Amino acid sequence: MSDRMTGKTNEAVNGKTTRQGWAQFIKFNLVGVLNTLVDFVLFTLLITVGLHYLAAQCVSYAGGVINSYICNKKWTFANREKTTSSQFIRFVAVNGVSFGLSLAVLFVLGNGLGIHPVTAKVAATALTMVVNFAGTKWFVFRKEGAH
Image 1: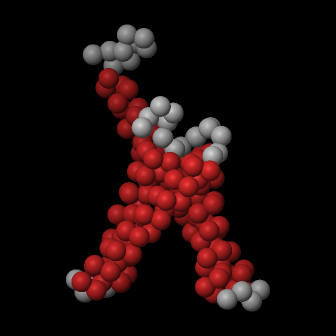
Image 2: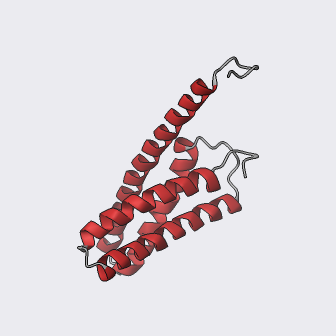
């Protein structure tokens, strides 16, 4: 079946959508690497100048989240809408849910099943990476009119 307006087949449209989704997923994870770098650099600088490590963690983690929002909005999802407080709050909420889920997975796998913490962390990261991507794509930076 083809689209009468564009002449494109559903298969061509779906293939482009799938490729675009994978490209976004890869970009999302590259941004995640950058966020980790921002977090670690800020953390290291802050503790070097004498800030307590827990305070430094709060500031550096927030720096990574802000970097994530900007890079994912502009690059990963090419969202050109004006930034709103509700969009940023949705972003923070998605990240909060992902963080909570990672803690739950770590607890269940580590305490409940006795799995080594690093192995549990890998599993938690894999799960929350997908959850965070889906929430960011379809809840935070959804296309206008998509609900």
